[in-house]
Length: 459
Ligand code: ADP
Image (tube, rainbow, N blue to C red; front, side):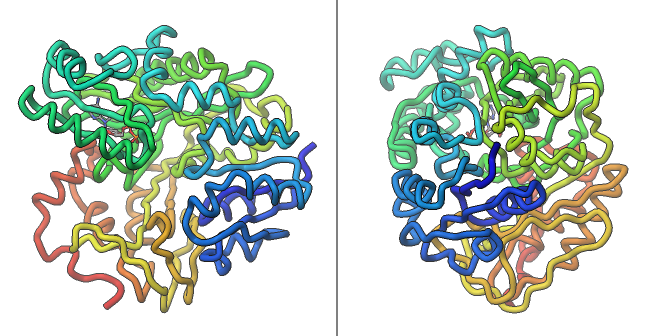
């Protein structure tokens, strides 16, 4: 029985977890940094403990401080959200050794899937299609060059510990390969403290389609359909939707089965995501497994009507899945825009600061997952995402029109945001026709009129 949960995170995901717990009658403990005292999740949790200064490595990444807070407040479980310690297998292990339930998969699974080269190998063994590439991590530039030449250019150089699109470089020929390899490794060392690299064939213009998995401790595994996350900037998602405008029933079934195979092969428990790239012919390939709740989980929730955070808590409590595969239907179309404090006309540089006038959209079929409000100060210490705006409806067209309407209603003064950029994408015929691949944003920016994003909300 889980009676009280510590939320080892901040921002909108912390608030999302507080809300699910409220509905389940579970008490919540927020832990927060000095920069987050005014955040909504701190205000709305039942209890709150400050765990240190603003810097992540002095607060949200401090397992020792979080576990001390857990002991002091006598919690039964910890929900790690996404980012921070959510994919840290040592932290999951420490929770269990303190007799605190970690709401996520087993630490062995996190460990295996956290190494993207090992994950690839495990998936290949399980019969899940992978992109041609190196077996395991590469020892040095010489070995990497040989492998790249064997695969054939272009190739993508990726960090074994990678995430958030960092430590990733494309090489189009052997001449540029060594330079790109060294740059990617340096970036990976800086970002993850781990310079181990691997190489994959670079697919031209694929779609990013991922499957949401739920698995209980009794061996039941289901998928909740896909999310199309092809609209990306620098390999980071900007807009996500479910279902994918590209998948038909047959492809969905085949990919869903492969996702279940991937989860079963790794003894997966709790909510997870299997990411694939899909080419124009409908061939699909595993790229990675995320062993946590994803930022874009709300899209699946609105398309299927299933509350993923509640399911995570039920699974962590040892309960069986409350649904079978046949009960899952993508009954609605849902779309999410990531609203960020950044300036598109200045290369999307972050724009922290204090929000002045604030009015969030609402109405039929609109969901606003955000921890900010008028007078709130967006900290420069964290990710620039300030809201996940989700719209949903019976058809894709309804969801898109509704999203445009909601974006047009949104008022955020005092800081710059990407709202005008998102509105322009929502009106773009290629996007509306469901043609976006992972190179869409770059193409769109290249052909967009220069003054398109001049109008921003802080003026
Ligand atoms: P991260 O863990 O950093 O998010 P992923 O492996 O999930 O990295 O890849 C992120 C994005 O990078 C993908 O959605 C896709 O746009 C691009 N990408 C990754 N691997 C390839 C590949 N082999 N070919 C083409 N694009 C790729």
